[in-house]
Image 1 (cartoon, helix red, strand yellow):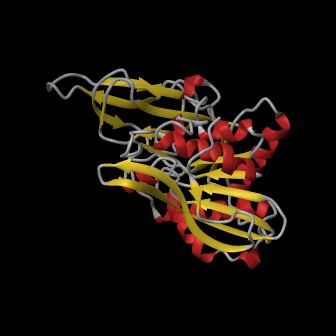
Image 2 (image 1 turned 135 degrees about the vertical axis):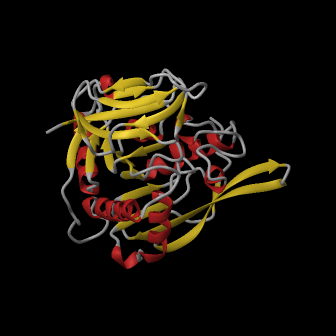
Length: 330
C-alpha cells in the first residue's frame, strides 16, 4: 500500500514536550499548494505505555477538544512514565466548520476507517491514524458527545469483543474513566469506526458520549478532564489515585433499546435523560406540523431501563434516531 502523505512536525521518540502538527497535503480553491495543519502535542519521558488521546472525531463535539487543549498546556513531562499523544481535533476541517463532517470533502471521520492513503482528506487522516498512530499506542481514548443532533447522559463505553481478555481490559479502563454511567455499547454501524480499527489492533479502547446539543457544559467538560486523567493513571502513565464517584453500569446490547422515528414532525420528549422508564412507557410524541387538530404519534419504550440518549432538535423525520433506553447491568 502507498505510504501515507501526512507528515508530523514532531518526533514521536524524543523525550520532552512538543507542540506541532499533522501536516496533510491539500490543494483547494483557497490554497493551491496548501496543507491542513492538525494541531497535536506529544509528551514523553522514558520508557512506558503510550496513550493516544483524541477529540472532535466529529467536529461539533467539544468536550474532547476542551479537555485536551487544557491538558496540552498543563501536563508536564516530569509527571509521566511513558508517552502521551494528543490530537484535540481529529477531524480538524469538521471542527473548524463546527460541523459533524469535513467542510473539504464531507467526510465523516468515524465512518471511513481504516482509511485510504489515496482517498480524500478524511480517508487520508483515518489511514494515518490506522497505520501510524494506533500501532504506537497501548491505550486509546476517543472523546465523543452528541453533537448538534443528539444528547446523552454522560457515559464511558466499551464493546463486546471476541478476545475476552482484551474486552476485560477495555471495560476496566472505561470504568476507570469514571463517568456517571459506564456502558457496554452496541454500535449501530461498527465496521468503519475508529473504535473498531483500534480494537482490531488489540488496543485498550475507551469511547464516551458526554452530552450533546452542539456545545459543552461545565459539568461535561469536567467529566472529560477527570476521565482522561483517570485513564492515564489507570494505565500507569501518571501516578496518583484515581478520582472516583458513583457510576451506574448499563448496556445497550439488546436492539430493542433503540427507537428510530418513522414520522416527520415536532417531537415532544416525555421524560428527561437519566429517568428510569418501564417497557410500554411513552417516550416521545410526534405532532404533524402540516395541520392542526391531529393526535400525535406515540413511541413507547421496548425495555425497562434508563433513558440514556435522545434526538436533540425539535423537528424530526423518518430515519432519525429518536431515543435509546439502556438496561441496567451488573
